[in-house]
Length: 213
Image (cartoon, rainbow, N blue to C red; front, side, top):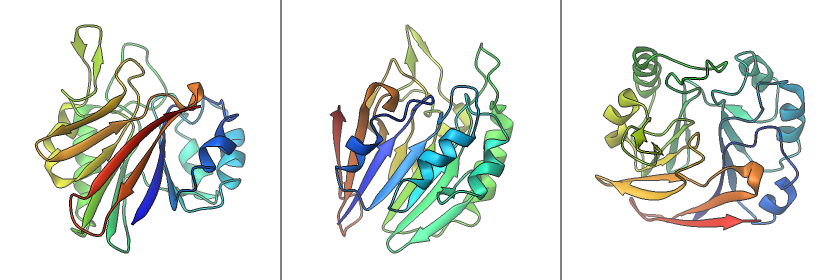
């Protein structure tokens, strides 16, 4: 079994990181919005303090130059790439589909399609296939009021994954299974929220616990 600590939407507030890490994960996944429109340097210092393998994508509130900083950090920048670790394959997609707020790291749906398709060409189908992204797929954990604001391009790729770790929508955290894919938005880590995903040895053996500190 492997335990994955899932964080998202830190927005520059790293005060709960010690408590999160006391959950004793094997890996840490951070699904974007490490900063609140920058700067990147404090986020990199936070990542360098994590003593287990950490896989990260930026969110829409992160400056695009955070990608360069992530390459120099101890974390693994997953935007637009795929990586196998044992029986787990990770794929990453940073940023979000367009928002009304003109945030720094937004992608058109066509760009999201291009990034995901390119990453999946390097993806090896594994026992557990995990997408780390910031925006949720359209129709799943993406409600803001009466509107669904997730990515339509991402939705088209959902079936390639057993687990999607996302964030972005502070109003709609939780765990939801859609057509065999488990989608997790633990809620903002800036508010002390996180999830622990336990992966068993068999495909689809995925357990999720939500925490609040």
